[in-house]
Amino acid sequence: MVRREIARRGALGLGLGAALAGCQAAPRQSPSAAPVPPPSATTSATSATTTAPRPSGPAQQLVRSESGRPEVALTFHGAGDLSITRRVLDVLAQHDARVTVLAVGTWLASTPDGIRMVRDGGHEIGNHTWSHGDLARMPVNPMLTEIERCRDELARLTGGPGTFFRQSQGQYATDTELAEAGKAGYERVLSYDVDSLDWTDPAPDRIRRAVAAARAGSVVSMHLGHPATVTALPGVLADLAERGLRPVTATQLFA
Image (cartoon, rainbow, N blue to C red):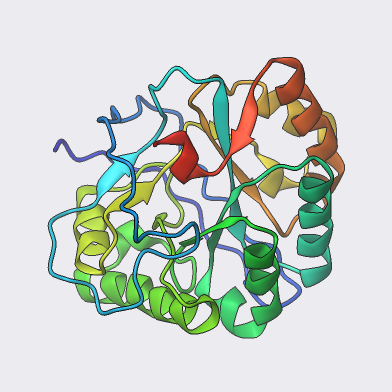
């Protein structure tokens, strides 16, 4: 696989009241997404396995689906204030929308009710590293620890390690990140082709315009911990519906 140089941004604080820094990378040609087999019958929406991971090769990177179905996956980086998370989940419930939440480990540890609310709302769960550091710049051992520590906290709180891993501070995973995710037991790394830019807390109309770039098969990056997301989300969902696009979990998108 050809290595991609990923543009990285420094992370913001991840305390209980802090919002998650964005993971946007500079625009570039995305890696092609190979056909993905559906998850096995033993894989649930929130966990792949509760046992120690078996040795495996590199994880497969997913960026967008080529199924042709009129679906998009809204994916949320899981961190930030619990009250904002609750409001985001309320909007999703009002629109009967299911999403994929990639949780940061420090958020799980400080705000365990957040991920339980996500799970109880019927949403899919994944791993977004322990501390949301600049993963691609880390040596291999700390990188693997970042993935495994979040994996284990997810398993402790929800019963499983999450269906996907997503790298922090990069739109696309590097070859090393894919290899270490595979070592941690993840078969698939969920990247994205559309950044909502909600992590910058812009005017809600700007978020809606950013998400308007989504097409059938797109994976959209959003965030639980930003007030602008709450304000923009009803319009985002209405815009998708008007265009005939249905929000689904990432597992559904790539099935």
